[in-house]
Length: 593
Image 1 (tube, helix red, strand yellow):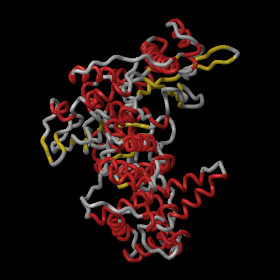
Image 2 (image 1 turned 30 degrees about the vertical axis):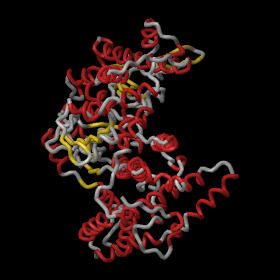
Image 3 (image 1 turned 90 degrees about the vertical axis):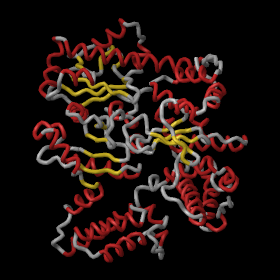
Image 4 (image 1 turned 180 degrees about the vertical axis):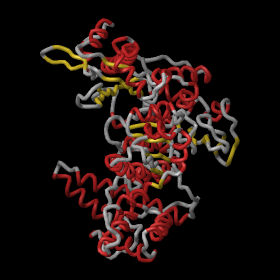
């Protein structure tokens, strides 16, 4: 059963968000909005904002955002149907559920069964760990210093010595092979069916809603691979989940600790650092960085202090920076990882190390410095030039100047000389010859950060701006069409907003209804509540609008050209690209008032 879009919108539109949230939060009117202390994290200064005009809320402290339906889901821990029924009753709306199509029903039933099977598998592994047959795994966890409470809290388990024990158990529960195959828990071939995991301690991987979506297993002994993870399934996507985030998001800490492995996260939580998470057996991804940004704007990296850990940190830092997260590096010498450090020096010392965590960009420069012998003038010159090139990641002039000042003092180079090298680095880009403006678009193409050079923030600013000032739509849409939003979820959000403009009714809160996952709903709500951090005069606002439009259009054309498969589109794209050369003809003017 499901609710139609019309039913969802009726409940949402008849549930006044200020009135509903006002029952849970003491709200005070400030201008056109209401503010109060966020109910989802501990704070002393109100950063929770409710907008009556948009019928949406956002906390500028912890990042939660949504409409009235997502608020009830989050606050009351309700499912979507439960929140719908609750609000419908409050609003005096009668709603009836509609039948799913056969295909939708099959898909929903399969996902439901997969969640059930994973939960049963987790219980099976836990029971096996606590049985005599799980002695090897149980002793391993105890040897790693884990308490009984921690083992139970994370649902840790043990997969038996091989064969098909889990398969036989789940078959006895009535599940068909066709469904069991979708779980990724088994190998099925002409010889039979075998459990994927055996002789391994097991780590259930949970999504943000505490559902088991996959598993990680560490082998007992010297077999390879040491760690084995569930394959991608209809529930499990390694790039879009983080181990421990379901617990970390509940914490009151303002930052999140990013670890390298499952055991590090578990040891950190046991030591009281319940804001620790880890990527899922693979390298950290940009998608995971975006997910973290929904919960924090600062991440502490606690990767292993060996060479592999340093490389992993250097890969993660740009992704975090591009997602708008300030990263800092926790140094754990003389120990390799957080688990060893806490066992060796204790939680209080680790707390000190976190407080002293190093600025991530300065860490990058320190690592770069080790590649050069700066006592050699030639080597020092090469280092200075490469350091200057790295400074181009900062588009904000004040921020860049602050780093120039710090680095010039630390590495014995005059501020004016380093600043000159930065400008020289920017001018090396062919498309930007003769332009000494370090703010220019040109240099962004030379940094492997085109997508992240503010494009996502530009999407958010433009969509939010259009929702606020619908009179801009005609001019903007002549340049930017819905297909120019190249990245999700912005592409879908833009398509829905443009459709609302075409229908003559712009209601951003309604767009949230088109996204099922709670994380997606928060992301969409965040899009439509993005504003500039400082107030600007009309002329500056107009310049900012045109810069955003230009950036989005240019990124779209460049990406389409890069991924083009139909040569017939080339001429049209080149015409569009040539139009960008004459920005005056593209200029959009802001109306008075």
